[in-house]
Length: 295
Image 1: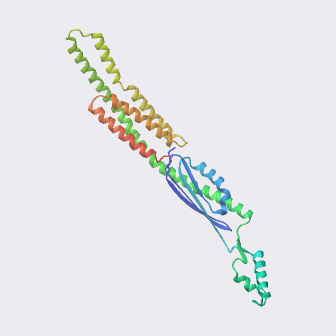
Image 2: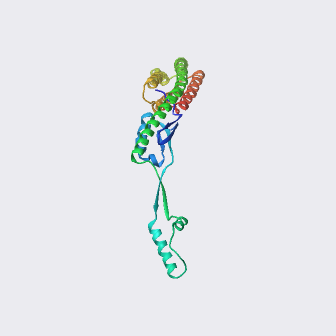
C-alpha cells in the first residue's frame, strides 16, 4: 500500500481532572525516527506510547507531543521548615540574652523569613495519574488514526502519479525494444557489407569474419535487459498493491531498473534509441524523487 510519509493530526480530550492536548506530525526519513514529548506527569507512559506509534508508522520521522493541563484549584500543603525555625529561635534567644532583642519569635516573623514555611502544590495521586495515563494513550491512538487516514489520502495522490509514470516507462521500454532491434539489424547489415569488402582482400579468413559478425550482433542484443525491466515493472505493481509498506523496496527496485537502462544505453544503436534511453532515465529520476515520500 502506498502511504505518504508526510502528515499532521491533532486532538484533545477532556477529563474531570485535566485537559489533554495531542499533536502528531510525520515527515520523510529513510528509517523510523521517533520523538515523543510528554509532561513529567505522564513520563511513565512513554514506552507504551512508543509501542503505539510503531503500530501506526513504519517509516519516517515522527513527532508526538502530549500536554496536560490540570483543572480546578490544586490542593496545597504547608509545612514548617523545622531546622530553619530552630536555628532562628536559637539566634533570637542569643540576642535576648545579650539584650539586643525583646520577645520571642512570632508567626509574623516566620512569614517574613524565606523558606521558613514550605508551600507545595499537590498533584494527582497515583490513581489519578493512572487514569490520566490511560486517557492519554487512548487520545494518542485516536490522533494517530487520523494521521494515518491523512497519509493514506496523500498516498492515493502519490500512487496516481507513480502509476502514470510507470505507464510512460513501460511504453518507453516497448519503444526501446523496437529501436534496439532496428539498430541491431542496421549494425548487422553494415557488418555484412564490410565483410563483402574484406572478402576481396587476400588472406582474409571468412570463418573468422563470420564469427566477428556474430559476436558484434550478440553484444547489441538487449532482450535480457528488456525482459528484466518488464519483470521489475510487474514487481512494482505487486508491491504497490500489497498491504505492507513498500517505500524502501520501491527505492531498491528503481536502482535495479536504472542499472538495466544504463546497460541498454551502452548496447543500443542509433540516435532514436539513445534519445529513448535519456527519456527513460529522466522518468526513473522522477519516480525516485516521488518514492522518497512513500512509507
